[in-house]
Length: 261
Image 1: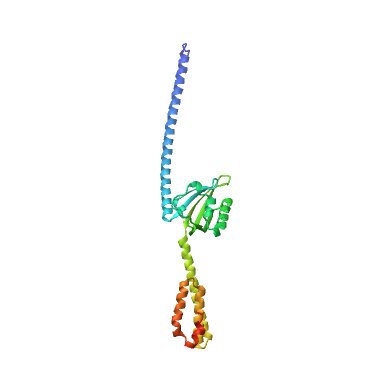
Image 2: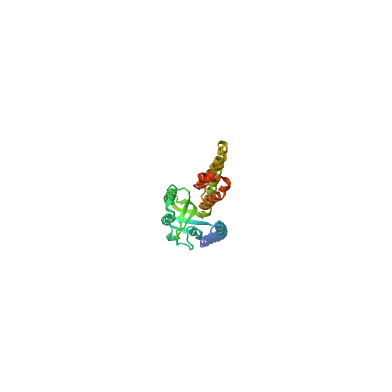
């Protein structure tokens, strides 16, 4: 079939318009898909942000309820972000600026007798990229001494360089005081057991009642003095012995048995 002059140009133009229309439809479809994907991403971001806020709120409540301070130490710039509870564990009522608390400042707050141990363990943890933990004494600005427990985890780059340490800190002074009181009580109990054992041993070998009474009293007094951590308790016990010795010993043996009490 022969085309009239100009018909081929008309057909070419028609084909071009059809292709352009198809491209426009495809472009519009791509725009719709892109808009849907953006909307979906925005919805996911909002959901993730809300979940993150909820998680943070739960974490903050848990830390506050447990009176636990948290900290984020920048190992590159030697600065840190900390909660107020963290700073309170070191004797401060108001927050310390981020740039004024790093490893060096922290170490200065550690009790001199614990300082070398704490600093060595902390720097070793950073060097070996391991978790860190320690219990130690700190000296507050008012010079009072308190016990704290601290734990931290290292964050590193893909090349294995430590950049941050995140951790928590807790005042354990009350726990340490309770442990010391328990140890003192155990010492007194051991002393009482030893005194009882010595008294029973004396019963087995001593035949003279007067010498037996004197031996038992000396043993109890010595054991009490050796194991009691309370000076008031020692004085009270000795006073009791003095008041009761007239009932325990005849006059002629009192000075020999209890003359040093």
